[in-house]
Image 1 (cartoon, helix red, strand yellow):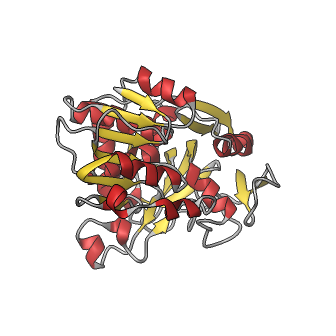
Image 2 (tube, rainbow, N blue to C red; image 1 turned 90 degrees about the vertical axis):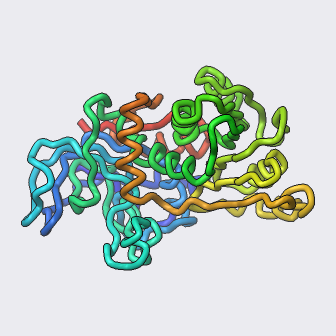
Length: 342
C-alpha cells in the first residue's frame, strides 16, 4: 500500500519534504481491531509539532495522520461492533488502558497509557490502517468523507474546548486564531449559545474576513482590544503572544482555554510581559485542553450533524501531503486541509 512516512525529526525551514512516499506492508487487524480502507485524512498543525520535534512521535518510522475516514475492510477476532463496509472515523485518541481512574471517569484523554493516532500508532496518511473498534466512530450520513475528516480532530477538540469555557448563553466568547478548529467552534457556539456574541482575533486578514462571513460579531488582529471585556476566550494558536494578549481582553472571573498540544519556543520571552494586575488578577482562569476523550468525538459528531456543520476544506492527493503541511506552516489556511486517497 502507499503511505507517507516520517523517518525522523525535520526542520521544515530546511526541508520542505519531511514525508516520504513508500510502498508499505498492509496491516492485519488483531483481536478487537478493524482494518480500514482509508478514504480521507485531515492535515493538522499537530503534525508540524510531530515533524519538528515539539511533540515527537514515540517511534520511527511513523505514518502520521489522526483525522481519518475509512471503510471497514476486514475485522479481527471478536470485533463485533461494526460490519464490513461501514464508514468509520478515527480521531487523535487511538487507545487508552480502560482501567485507571481517569478511564473509569470517562477521561481517557488523561490516561497515562494514552496512545495517539499518527504519533504512537500508525495513522491515516496511507491507504489502510488498523484501529481498536472501541476507538472508532460511525460517521453521520449527512457528511461526505472530506467534510467528516476535520470534524474528528479540529471539531472534536474544539467541542471539548467550548465545554471547558463554562460559557452561558449571552456571554461573550473570544476565539484567538481562526484555522480548522476555530471556524468549527464559531458554528458550534452560534448553535449552542444563540444570544452570545463571538469575537475573533487573527493575524491573517483573510481569516478575519472568513470569520465575519460566518457571523462573527467583531474581528481584529491578535494584539487588538475587543469592544468590551470577554467572558471566555479559546486560544488555538501555536505560540505565546496571543495567550498574553487574550488575558488583557478577559473579563474578571473569565476563563482562557488553551487548545494546543504544545507551544513553540519562538516567543517565550513574550511571557515576561505578563503583568499580574493587568493580566491575571480578579480571578481570571487559564485552563489547558489535553487531547480528546471518546465522549468528545461521539457527542460532537451528533451535534455537527444536528446543526449541521459543514467544514470548509481543500483537498490534496496523498502524494501532496508535504505541500499541505508546508501551507499550514506558512499560515496559508482557510478552513481545513484534507488528503484524498483514491
